Image (cartoon, rainbow over the protein chains, first blue to last red):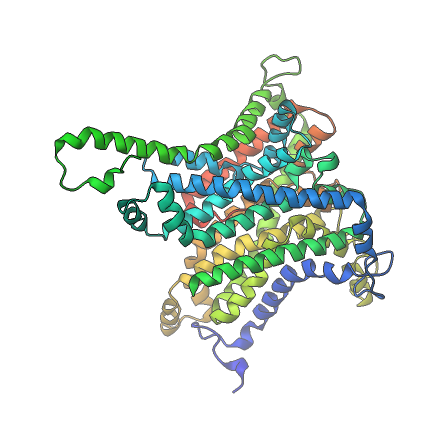
Length: 272
Length: 304
């Protein structure tokens, strides 16, 4: 009796009768992974067009990326915006999550809903609303404008992650610290924060990525010397397929993967 | 520094009642004050401007109060087409996601944990790569001289390059790729959690594998499937980037129309009215979802 005739699940169906299912599952997995990763080898193509597999390998598209002052400027802007967004959204979101989680006021539900709206409202509406406000506040095309808008988008994400960490944290520990003479801030910093730090680090990374990957709001409110990388990529994509974007995409995949690895590393050490 | 109420609750007489109440009030306001900076930011950069646009959508071009922008939406057939295509794209994307995602989640849920977790990385990988990068990848793969057409012709599957991008096909492929994880995650979680002994019982009682699946397994996975379906559909309604890049100007969803109104025509009133309708549609579906499934199952963050 071969493997094909063995029962595959509790329903006693043999593997043979559902080979199609395995093929479909493998195809869907391929569909999910391959298109993103195939850009990486293509970005090392030496010819005028993107090829797979490249007939000759070269770094010409990376050279054209690093040689372009506008791409470089956009890259710097994106990294700056991402880092600052992370610095603004993480403490703000953590504070809000902590305050809402602990207070038993009947306003907390309303507060929570208001703070979570940035991920509920369609991004295009957020985009034009921010644009409309920034024209009046003279914040269009400024770094601070991008950072504030992206922080607003990242706050709900930080809150969701930190709140779920607080739920599994035993608040009595903080009460103990305070009964021993620590004030609330000290109790939070020395007892609570160290124990939810993995959630805070993860949310800081996600806040960075939220800003780094954001297209629509950046399209409306970033420009000139404060254009973000994604904004420039998006504009370029609408015109023609510039192979330089393959090299930028590869770099963005590397950045995201590195951050994923960092957050996985922290996530794992929590379980040990 | 005031001492919090919970520290001194035991063994105190009445004289402290006023002090306790004061401390409790102080405590409550301190906690609420912690949300103030985030609240301020969200109010200034979003809630107030959105409210402003809401107001703007009821103003005619001469500044008087009117329903002109909404009336135009009903009278001009082009708006009807925009909404129709938005629903069409969202429904098709959701349907394809179910057909591809459910079987994959099913297979994954029966694999040993270790292997399944490895496969889940593949499912989650797209989550971690920029939406724009993935859209770009599809543009490269699907274009006329792209990889898919080159391979298809080399293998003799078709003769002429197929129009896979800059139309509805490309938009659907790109959106399904982005939305699949949102369907797979709740379905997979649901499937992992359910009691497999029920299937053994069904088989034991003489049900064929197909019967056991449709009568026992499938109905038990409906909550997860419903949650996934709704979240995919809701997120699809507001899509902008994918139709803009892969639709090549032929797939104009509500979001794209809003952007065009602003970028090309500077028509804030029309854009705001469309935005308000889109927001209300989204909220309606979220309310529907909230009635049908537990909302915390759906909240997992989202892309743009």
